[in-house]
Length: 557
Image (cartoon, rainbow, N blue to C red; front, side):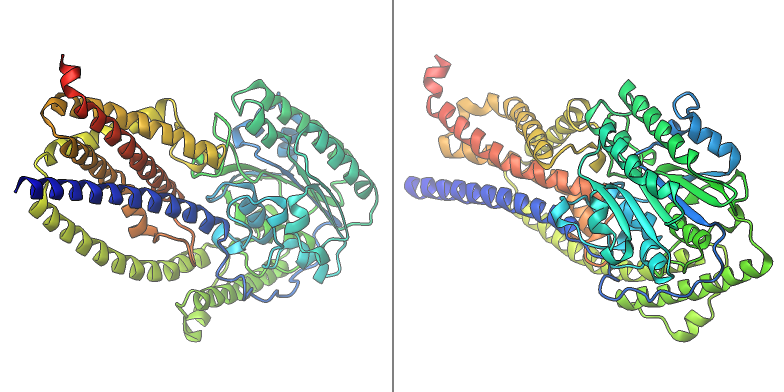
C-alpha cells in the first residue's frame, strides 16, 4: 500500500512537471505568434482596393509642399523659443491640433497620412518592419492620385518611403537610411533644387531627427529633444524661404508623439496628438477645432486638384480652404460618392454586406457619418464573434471550477493567496523598475521586453516561494514538496492569464480582419511572458525545494 501511494505521488509530480513545461512552451510560442500576427496583418481591402474617382476641382495652389516632422509632439510644436518658424506659420495660416489612432508607430502613421485611412484599413505595416520587408501601399494615396492626374511628384526623406510609395507614383526621390541631424541636412539639400524650380507639383519632405532624439538621446524630457526640434525648425525656415505663399501651399504635420521617457507605438494621448499647420494659397487662416489624421490626405487632394484617395475615411477640411459655392458642392458630391463606395467595399470585405438601397440612402457631406456607419458595420461582426467566444470561455470556466472544487489540493487557499501576491509583486516591480507603462510605447526591443519581465517574474516568484513554503519544508516529503511548489505555480499562472482571457474575449487571440485593442493586446503578451517564466521558475524552485527537503535533517541541525 505504501509503495502504491509512493508511486501515485511521483506520478502526480511527473504529471505536474509535464504540465508546467507544456504551459511554458505553449505560452512562449503563442507570444511569438501574437507578435508575428501583428507584423503580418493586412487590411481587409488589401486585395480589393476601392477604385479611385475623379478630380472634383481645379488645383487651389500651383504647388503643394508637405513637410512631415517625425515624432514632433504637439506641446513641443507650441514652444515659440524652440520652433519660432513653425509658430510664425501658425499666425499666417490655418492651425489645429491633430488626433491619430493607435498603433502610434511611424509606419501606420505614414499610411494614414498618405491614404486618409486608419491603420486597420490603410494596409501599411501596423508595426514597423525592417527596410527589406516593407511593401508598397495597395490603397490609393496622394502620390498615386497625383500621378493619375498628371502631376509631377517628389519625395525626400527616410528610406522606408522608398518601399511604401509605389514606384510608378514618384518622379524623383532621395532616400536615406539614417535618422539624425546629418540625415535631415542631406534630405533638405536634396529637396532644394525641386523647391527652387517649378518642375514638381507635389513635394514631400520628411525630417527625422526629433524621433531620433526621442529614441537615442534621452527622450522628450532631455535638452537634446528641444535642440533637435530647434534644428528642424531651422530647416523648415530654409524650406519656407523657397516658397511663394501667393502661389504655393505648405502643410506641416507629425506622424506621432513620444512618451516622456522616449518611445511610441502605444495608445497614450501624448503619442496620438500632433500639430497641423496649413499656410499658403487657397488657405483660410485661423485657429480651428481638432482635426483627424485621416483628414490630411483628402485635404491635400483638394489643394492639389486630384481625386480624394479612394480609401480615405477622412474629409477635406473645407473650413480651412477658400472655396467657391460650386467647388463646395463638387466636394460634397465627390465625398458622398467616394465614401459610399468605401463603405460598400469594406462591408463586403468583412462579410457584412449592405444592400444597395441602404448605401444609396446614405448622405455624406462634411460630417463623420461614414466613420460612424463603418464602426457600426464592424461592431456588428465583432459582437457576433465576441458572443461566441464568451459562451466558450464561460463553459470552460464553469468546467474548471467544477474540476477544481472536486480535486482541489489541500493547500488551495495558500496557493491562491500566493498567486495574488506574485501578481502584486510583479506589477509593483514592473511599474517601478520595469517598463513603467502598460503600452507598446515602453518597448525598446523584443529582447528587452522578454528578459526584463522574465527576470521580474522569476524574482517575484522567488519571494512568494520563500514566504509561502519555507515553514513547510521540515514537514514535507520530497515528492509532496515538489507538488506543493507546482500548485503555487499553476495558481499563479491562472491569475496571470486573466488579461489574456479578456484579450481573447474582446479581440480574439489573433488579428484577422480587424486590429485588436492594443492596450489589451499588450497585457495579453505580458501575461504570456509571465507564464513562460513562471514555468521556468517552477522547475527551478521545485528542484531547490526537493534538495532542501532531502537534506532537511542536516538543515535542522
